[in-house]
Picture 1: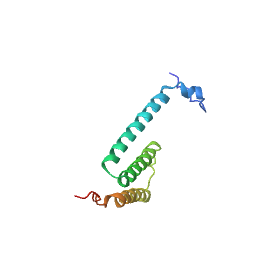
Picture 2: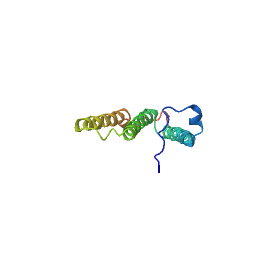
Picture 3: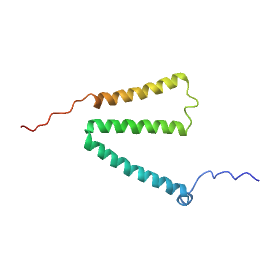
Picture 4: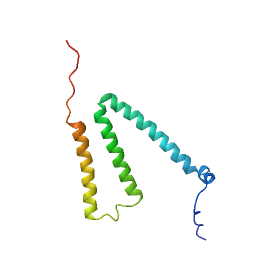
Length: 113
């Protein structure tokens, strides 16, 4: 058997719009966005915005960084010093979110008996 031909140097819009992967990715992105907004709104109904928004931002950023590191195989060439710096950055983000929203007490109700 002959090896498959190499992929083209660049893709045209027609190539992208006829590929099933494009539509599958578009569907996954749309479903993920709708579910994300749904759960973000539900969380804001239960907790304050000062807790939900930093936690959401931190979680999204952390997932994006780790996902990109997995896709581009950046963990394979990470030395001990890089791993410690990465772990320290994650720890700093978690502590920052905890300091922003974790130490607050519930506000007293303004209603009088």
